[in-house]
Image (cartoon, rainbow over all chains, first blue to last red; front, top):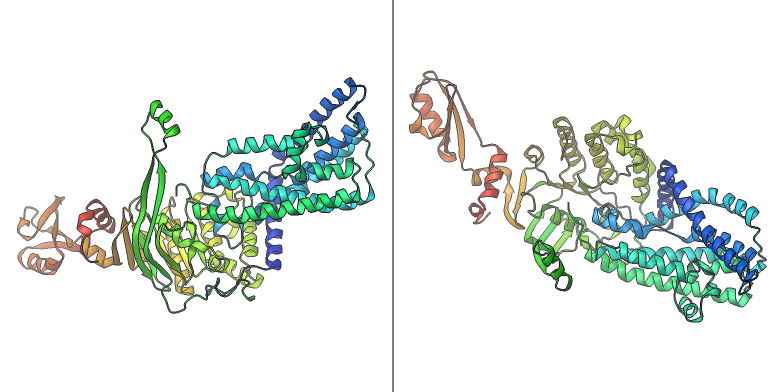
Length: 278
Length: 347
């Protein structure tokens, strides 16, 4: 046994191997907590269903439509939203606090790979597993609620990059905001505020088209709509090719912005790191 | 298989081969700790006026460790040992001074540096508790880019030395503390680090497990020439592994030198245990009698005169049995920490 072979980390092949390893680990861990997964999934399905029920009732009470949204288009909106939200959500913000407080971040910081990769792989594994259940569920919901959607071909083409960018923006932003845990050990208030804003401005409580003018302007100026509402609108709305291209460009711009924010904050956070205890 | 470094040369300096493996120069760490009086009024007052106290955990310590050396890092709880190890491993940024490990600045946490070191602590786990250790080993292999053949060989060696066998296939949370620590030490060494920072690697383990890990670490050091800096509350760890010790207290360096020198400096006496054939024999003239029971008398004499006193006792008194002992190392260390004023003066 000799020590210290000069292996230089880095490179795409290395990252690929790390992702494969993390992905396998994550699947193994998540399969151990099947019960918890089922409860999480129930929440994932029930949330949009509640909004769907409310908006259906509102539509029925206002003569079948709200600003052009019929019951069938609400059904389409919320079933698609359920899937899009599952693709783009992450739980990092809720883990960071205890991670820092209990010093569980130290082993991650000692590895010659940025800790964000482990979380990313973990989230991707979760999506792969949950989609196996969620896609059939969406099918059942479609049979029950009769959604109507007529997506344009260019919008369907744009869906994959739009979902990828939406997840990338949301994941990077949330991972970066979670770094607040380096400064304060009580981040749950921050998380709740973020959650409330996200719920409202990403189109989860209501389609953004139904928001009052000023709120829509705020939603347009912030990244949240690009993390959920935009991919949903690709399928449920009738965007022009120009609007689709502009949307993808806006997502890419936001991704660049949050990556930049991440770079700066990460550097400051690791300087700041003072593992509690131990 | 080595790839060319991806970082520009200026950011990835080649480690200096001839220099020390570890170098601390005036290394210091200050924490800002919020504090307030107990009680509701103080709690309310702290709402708008937060009082922060600067606590110095490590206060300008300097030392060097040569490649291949095994050094014991001693100090009571809160002395700054763990903070120092964390600064050397790159987890904490020093508030003052410089750290250098294998020619790298730890706080920059360059992958090439992290690839060459490990930090083992009894409290934090590198292993995922929900899956068997073997799976964590595989992940470690990917993260540290260990070639498959080398990985298999290393695992086989670690298995042989630590007797991991069936432990590897059980979920980590179902292992006992000792079993887990063995896996923890093993996973930390899979990438064959050149510098090992070990923070209480045997804490909470039974004597057998402690001995096993100790023997393993000695063997690893001998085989690989790795540099080891080790803290432990078990002096047996330190005696078995380290010829040199660094003692810190309240963030300051108290002693840096050979273990024997620590003993002779802080406990400059030896203990002579005599069993005279006449139980009533008076031995008070030979040294300070610290105990006398069951016909056995324990004398404390200055280290320098121990040999002469032993000779005199053997010449003057009819003796059934006589042994000369060094004070137990625990006793020495306790003495160092409780009487820090003794530590002043050149090391």
